[in-house]
Length: 477
View 1 (cartoon, helix red, strand yellow):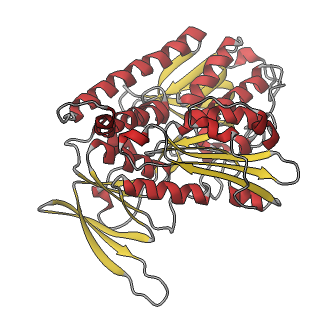
View 2 (tube, helix red, strand yellow):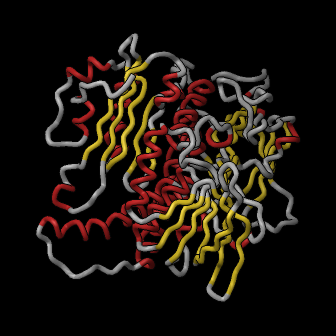
View 3 (cartoon, helix red, strand yellow):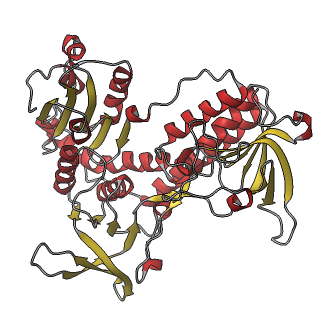
């Protein structure tokens, strides 16, 4: 066990105190306890953090639900005849809530089973080794309980970024979307990132009339440009109305519910144009920010960087040697598996042998659960070209299922290859189950796969995934 000072371990209440029981915090607390460390995990909200409660899990469940109307319609092409199905929003909400409650219990169980102590409350730093915890059940005037720890881990995650314009108080955040009442028949989504695009696809699939408003020229900044243009077209085909280069002036209520006035930015020599859109609900999905309020960072001399994240070194250590931070709070990549990996790195350094290899942030696969899905790993074409000459292999087709389903949905697959070494730098897919397909290829990229390796691989037929190992012709250089 490594230490940051010479003070005996017994002089502290615990070896590791974790503030935040999201994915990263629970993982760190659980595995540190399994290694014999005395662990306290402090959490005032629902266990599991964003991912379990208002992020990955409920959003994916709703994404599944949103596919059924389309699936029922497509089944007619395969000979199925049935009455038009009816969607019950209340049933979906109740079923989701029950599953999330089950997962909350599992998270608590794994912590206690590993020997960690769970303290229900809100933690803040007092000094480099002391945390004050205000109980969720205690009177606001009651003094907090103080705990001392050899190491402190900040794992409080992030929360929705609030937008400031007239009437912004009438808009919802992504955290609010799972229990809306009633179901919004007309939904305006403001934003262009993966959260905005996913909710737009989900509610369009569930039966809402969705309008997506984004101030930039393209959705999904940072993703491969060709992939972004392709998914934008597919979302429009499915009925999502998308306004790019558009900003929101205000949100105001009227007799019909809520009116959203948009100001569309004109091109060179053009004037702006005002448009009013009626909506039953307005979602602000313009990003998430680290949850640092109330942590007491200033008390120990930790200052946020320009992005509002907590600066850490390669070992997830802050400027205070005994205080560490991981996950959304440090801003490497706001993904649950990244927080889990960072937690394991930290635990290995503090309570293991410190031999765990560092995380390669350039090869982290990810998926966007739009309809259809996006799956991606490695470099975009744009990023790869900045490094040197590349070869691009590209295939676009109608999936076998849709030869009978009647759907016009198309699939895009793309391989980015370094021309000199033949090494595969990036793989991208838009299509059904894209995340499931890309996960396997992410292993190959970690192992240094070349295009020649893909060419020698026998595909599984008939699948969409086999296209990745049958592309032979260079699309462009």
